[in-house]
Image 1 (tube, helix red, strand yellow):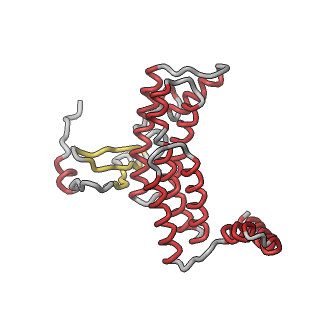
Image 2 (tube, one colour; image 1 turned 90 degrees about the vertical axis):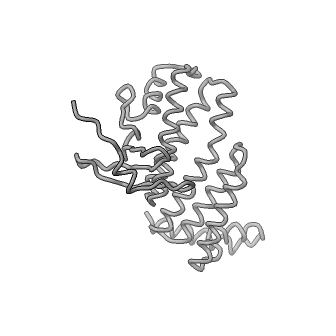
Image 3 (cartoon, one colour; image 1 turned 45 degrees about the vertical axis):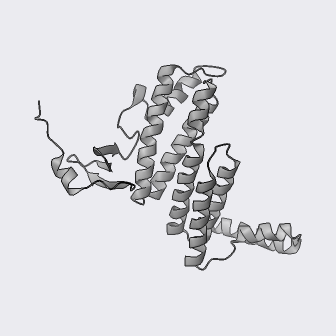
Length: 240
């Protein structure tokens, strides 16, 4: 049996910073890429693929995948057990920690992927038979997940496609957040609008084509709107 080792060297050379998500990508001795997060009393280590804890619940890649597999064998609304709800909570927590770490290390597409997983898990719970109190307590977090997803997707677009794509991604995210029944989204909306304003100023970007189209329709400038639609369609074909 291997001798247990302490974490003194890691903790001394990587101090905890309150109020900051401190994360890094490292390679294990076996060559795996893992994500580490410095927390107050130590370090969290997460797998970069599949479930963050590296387990395969019931042989499935994630607990959501297992739930979906089990759902195929049933009909009607699923009643989730207390044990299943506990496992769902675990998966929510694990993907939350990995999601904020991906944002911290600027792995934006990976943050989007983990946010999409959490949203899919939330959708499954919403369609299942759970207590109203549990549902309200957990699903009100949808706004935070949408906020993280919008941040990550916008910054990924900014790096890969440019300012206009990033601004449009924020517009889509704002619409999703504002349509969400989650409380306390005002500060999230404010931060996304600040990010959008920064992108406009830094990249000298005025109204996007989609925003100009909305303006033209609102002003009943139908010829102008038709021209903008044609330009948007042409751009979509060029991307394909």
